[in-house]
Length: 527
Image 1 (cartoon, one colour):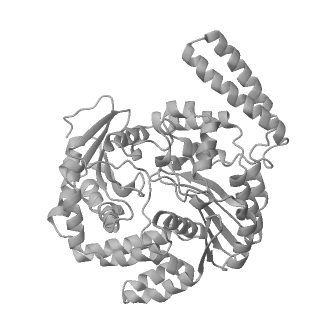
Image 2 (cartoon, helix red, strand yellow):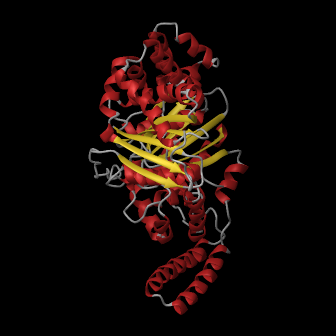
């Protein structure tokens, strides 16, 4: 079983007014037709659906602080589960970047009972491995090559001894055998989530497995997995033009906030991580009062609550109620920043602008702006840069980069067409951004964008899993899943004046960060 490795870059996609999707998908199998109907009916027509959805959601909190959200849907005998840990890359100690993502990998390695033939014997070898690793780190500093060779030989032998007790991928095997699907995980700058689906009659099995792996995890195969992660970094960052561009772009866009650091971690930090580092991070942030579990599908809330008390009630409460809030506040940017990355690649151009966090009242306005600029072939960037001027092969934009729990970036980027200079593309792209400041968006264009946002949400949340993930995220990030329903009101209330007001305060020269991805031999005088 492998967790979702692509997620390590942590790009937060927009949630787009969840209420519409939930209402339509949950209560009408003709989803899209209902959405289409709402375009001509009074806005209040969706309220009965909303009310029925709310009635089907149950929440409860165990004595130890662990929160559950249950959305009941008996249309099919399937249940989706999401365990949402409110901790991500921003919470990592300095010098230990990548530890949140590393822990995500290790969460699939099993427990004292799952994944081993003899845990007491295995544990002794794991402890020996940690001791030898610490010695290797010290000897590497001294430069004693003879001692290093001896320790390396001991390390390899001890690792082989530990591996004799390992039953690889046992956790995933149990899930597969019981009919589970889509066992996976994702780590972002803001959070880490674990998710899979089971047949409805396997509710108790899920309770047993999921509680066990976070109650008594064993971070076995630690050093082998470190090499997997290092290779992942080489593939997705060091040897990837876009990966390299994004890492350097974030590093210059932020001065002090940990959003500047890659979620996958820096190579040196990953290499130096110890099993003790991961265990300490786990004990600090995976307390029950920092976990939210969302369950959607063919279940009864009373059954869920009874089993949750039995299995998850075993977790001990801890004094901290939340991970420490990131204290570093990014200072306002005072001048344009720019970074150029040289890499064999078609030239890319990026612009980033600092915007407020998800909790800000204007955040939904930024999501509308992103959609306005880059909503497929009808978007302003595509029409202007790709179709009319033929300066770009593609052009996109989105908010919430690399997360949205804290003030973040709106990113706009484009891939140049052959023979087009990056500077010429930049001028044309910026002209479209300036239009938002100087011209009021036509009401009919704004309404089209709002409809697109709702339809997009329908496409992303047409499953129990989609619903569960959004419910858990909103509960953790905003304090209540009910805030989902407030976004519809915010979306409907946005006016052309709001777009212009937000654009004027955001898209300024001093708030701009520029990124250029150029091939080693680049003709700056291209057309």
